[in-house]
Length: 104
Image (cartoon, rainbow, N blue to C red; front, side, top):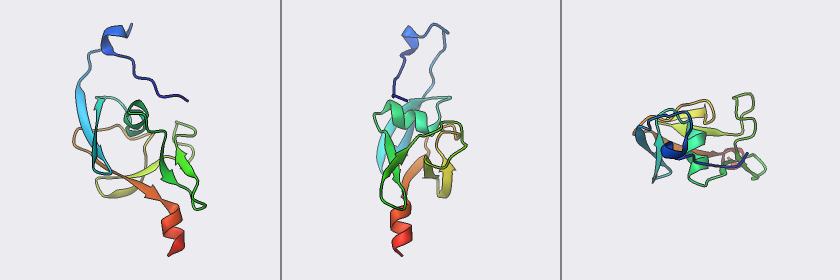
């Protein structure tokens, strides 16, 4: 899967974008209403946002919520699947690392 942002003016469906802004690890990212958190991250150029227990980078794998590679913390709630959760204006997203948890 490669990130790609289709501008509203170029979209054949005639959609009208409602902008939103989320914060990911303190960095503001812009998206549009209806995008998932994973969609906002991918459109911003981020392909990974979590580490597995072995320390390998993870992002979107299946994109449909069947796996757990895209987990993030959203507004203090851990283990949210970024591919399933629609972004909401003002969301505070924090990336997760299983490598850190397993080291404890």
